[in-house]
Image (cartoon, rainbow, N blue to C red; front, side):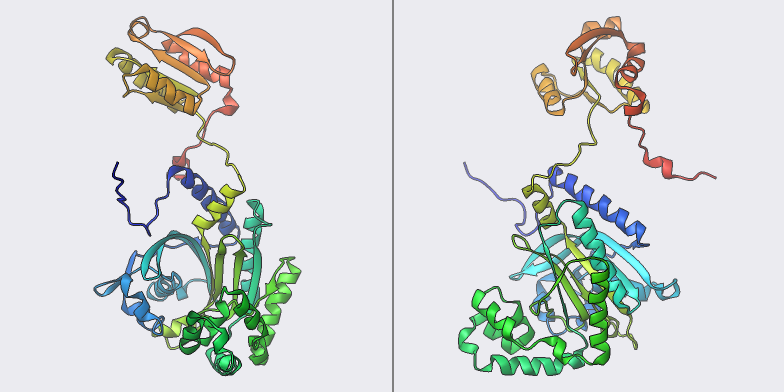
Length: 427
């Protein structure tokens, strides 16, 4: 049989099972955001290409596959968020501004467009090392809460200002000058384009070389060094474990100061972040707007949770399941099922499948606590056969007494009283 692949390979589906984990992660992070004063922001899926020209100028040609005329697919979320901050006059708000966004973004993998589900947050305006430590601590706390505390390590480094990096890059070139024969073709190309990228190698021999290379911290000026030391001091105070790693670097010049990542052996970088104090200058501002950000790859964390066989509680357990056969039964069951839901009973009704076998098969997958099968005779006499699937008993119940009977059996405290409309404030 000929198999046809209908979806774009780089645009992965998120199926219902994964969405359960995605919803779980969103709830956990939103709770953490609320505790730390973050507010949600969303940016358009298409941005003006001009917003990205300056910020990505050294890599801009590499993003050509994301171009649509004068627009570009949303990528590098820190750029559209900073653009929104400037355009919407968020500078007039009480500073710093704490923002988070849960959305789809796009990247390029070997010039193929890759769709990512990201959780991303950012603090704009302040240039304080404790804010860098706050973001690291928040992420560390969340990953520990979801039982992944042993699945990653935290690595930190410093990039600092573009001026400080110039001398460092010269020193890095000198270090590798007589070692080019030990480097791969890719690393030699990086050495010509951007020597810092040589440090990101995954080759074991090149990693050893990178560990012996000059360290950025030796090139920091007084203020820069004091800032970096303060970040580490705060992390120690917060009991957040980390290690310094010279291979944690970035290819983008607008990223400055502290840079860090949460690294998993199986999934590589599950989250990364940095400061980008100079990004506002790339967006035609005359002064720096300090900012620090973090991103979190949802797909990888879902994979980690699954690999650890971490199960989520099923909040959609069905208390009452109706099977209705033939038209008369459907006319009876449908309004009763609606009344049951209004009475806070988790109810599902199978109205559309004529086969008893298929409807019972669906019930076995849902495993509802109470099963009511309505044939034509039950619909006519109004007496329903109610099967208690926990106790394996069966009782006849009048249709007008069914809801009260189910509530008595499952208990009022076990009803589902959730309703999003309760958040409405009526004046």
